[in-house]
Amino acid sequence: MSSTDINVDELGGKYYLSNEEQHFKVTILSNDYVIRLTNTRDSVAEKYDKVFVEDVLKAVKEEKHRRMELVYDSINNSIEKMAERLHNTLIESNELENQKVRHLESKQIG
View 1 (cartoon, helix red, strand yellow):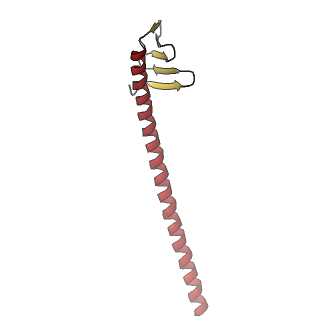
View 2 (cartoon, helix red, strand yellow):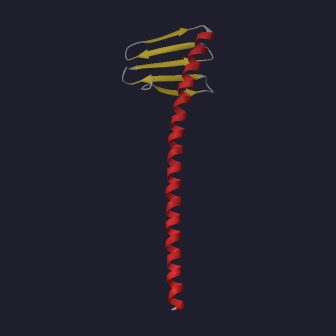
């Protein structure tokens, strides 16, 4: 499922799964309990039992959520690394300023 794209229109109750490699698209119409499977030649839509469609939707939502967590984790890691670099740069800059001040003070004393 990792190579399958998941797009969601929760307000419209539509869920789209597509896989370019295997040339298929799945549309889940949650309000009507209809699942449409489309490939390069054919398109088939079937009405399913409410419980079955809800189970399919639950699996799709869990996968979408898992993927979003991976994205969030990646973004958080990047932000933390950036903040650490900024912190280190500020410390180095501060140390340089302190050295300049000490150097000027020692010149004024001497």
